[in-house]
Length: 178
Image (cartoon, rainbow, N blue to C red):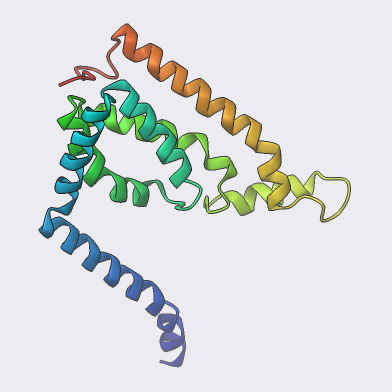
């Protein structure tokens, strides 16, 4: 009984976080605030003359930035999708196209995000092959990987823009525009 109590005590923090998160998601969905924000942001983007592909490129860079502070891909998508999918539908883009832009932004900065779940493993493997003991840390890995991350971000964004302008489908039976 004592062992089970001790084991379950460590789960208490997780249950509290899940409870608070569930309340937030419930209130967010019932209030429809995501749709209201999406429509207002779509109107602002239309007024600024930003639509279509350039809004999606903005989402790529926003997601790449948010990825540095929120580690899990599904938690970021849960946070961003209620706003960006309706906003992009309002701009004439399909939800699949929105998710494509999200995935590009999410994938490019994973290696420089210390919150990525595999980051400690990467640091461990890198330090194993470093000659000077203890010289390979989080900062060193981020500094080494930053150029690669930026090249991937810019390269994937250029490929995304070219793919859109060529009008190629993003999947079987899936178009980019509504």
